Length: 228
Image 1 (cartoon, rainbow, N blue to C red):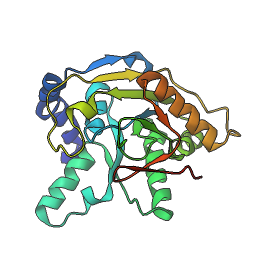
Image 2 (cartoon, rainbow, N blue to C red):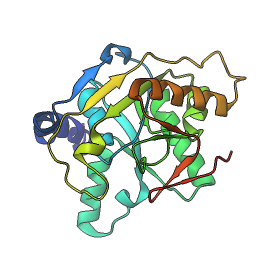
Image 3 (tube, rainbow, N blue to C red):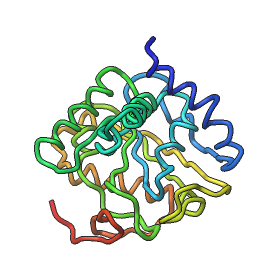
């Protein structure tokens, strides 16, 4: 086992996990809905930066997720250490420029599922600017239909309260994680990616109780008109 593979259990059980549990007192419901083995997609709403740390904290299996390419390209020794950290905690570099880069990210995500692991994704594509639930990007549907992996909807509640926009260090406070029943699209290959995405978003909304906005949330805190 190389050094990077040791990062995940070290962070979860020694460095970050204990203080996070103490600070956020996560209350989890529906954990039994996460399969103990085999591929699964965790599809969660996105309210704060720490969302990507909360899911690995409460799910027993290792969780892989996409990370901004910038996390992996910082120069020098600090940059190499940062890249090793993010790879070690399960992050997969993604270039947000679109096109071929988006397909490469989809391929990398599918590879996680094809080897039987857990992949987490925020269908909204970016953090909600105001706490509402925004229209889902279709990447989650493409991934589910391509791999046949079940999709488990997840609602994160309270992360925006402990880490509101502009706050780098979260403050203590209760976080709730609600995990819903798995959605199986393996026999629905003819279903459109938009219909699958919308069904996943509805399942998240039923768990979170958020108001829904039929627009894409844009990076930087605004919303845009629906577009496919």
